[in-house]
Length: 93
Image 1 (tube, rainbow, N blue to C red):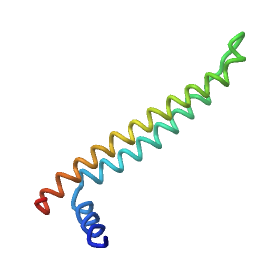
Image 2 (cartoon, rainbow, N blue to C red):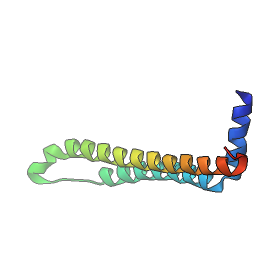
Image 3 (tube, rainbow, N blue to C red):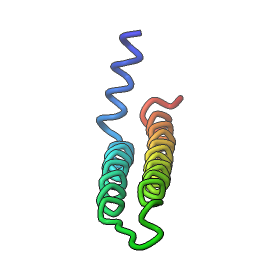
Image 4 (cartoon, helix red, strand yellow):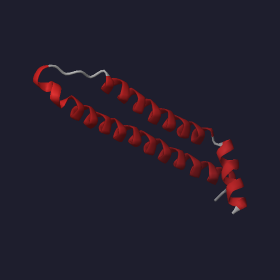
């Protein structure tokens, strides 16, 4: 178990593409969440739509959460693919 973990850390330290994919995935996740919260917080409705303001906010926040999670998953899939390529390159299998 310890050998597998040290091999994982060795490949991760040499694989710049994997590191960038993980970092970009995390940054985009947090960025989309904050951007969504900012945009939804500034949403104001007037007139007869005022009663639906909270419902629309919650729906929009839910959509921003889904988009952020999609970014995170896609970038981590890319990181895993880069990790596998570098593992084959460094260890030959």
